[in-house]
Image (tube, rainbow over all chains, first blue to last red; front, side, top):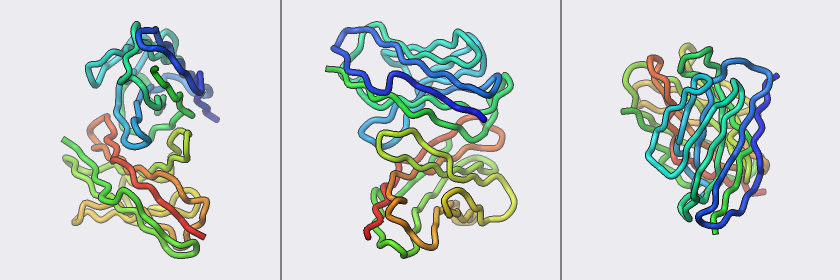
Length: 116
Length: 113
């Protein structure tokens, strides 16, 4: 069966510090991968998605970037955090096979980021 | 553009009573519809989906959802609510021919003993 991991679970970082959140998926190949941010325990905002290694699409302009160095690894980064970057970050995967097709997405446990 | 509306921020029901969480959508072409549940400080869990076929879809934990094309709705239902059903519920939509899900703003379900 497939599992998705995210770490760290919680993170408190000062403004201006760098960020690296990691997401890995097990038990599948060529997944589509997604990064979402959830603010105030409500709606989800899609930040990035990827259909393959090195292929990243950004949905909104922001202070963050994403990378996919391996098939089942997705990393969310920032060089300098802003207060507004605080939130709950969720990684998700869906079956892909190298193209972006509509399927149900399966979410990781999330990372709670607080920027102070 | 596709969109999802969950008109109720919160739904309160008594344990043992039936529950309904409402969702309406807008999408070009045939819809691909989903319900997810989120418990505090957790990721979203997939509950059920509608692609085609029967308008009543059954999912996990005794939940079901009814697709109504004429009303562009996909309401989540359960015949008998449990206190453990208390959580945040999200509806999502995408088109068959497209590649992105759009999530609603979420509805908090509170089931009281």
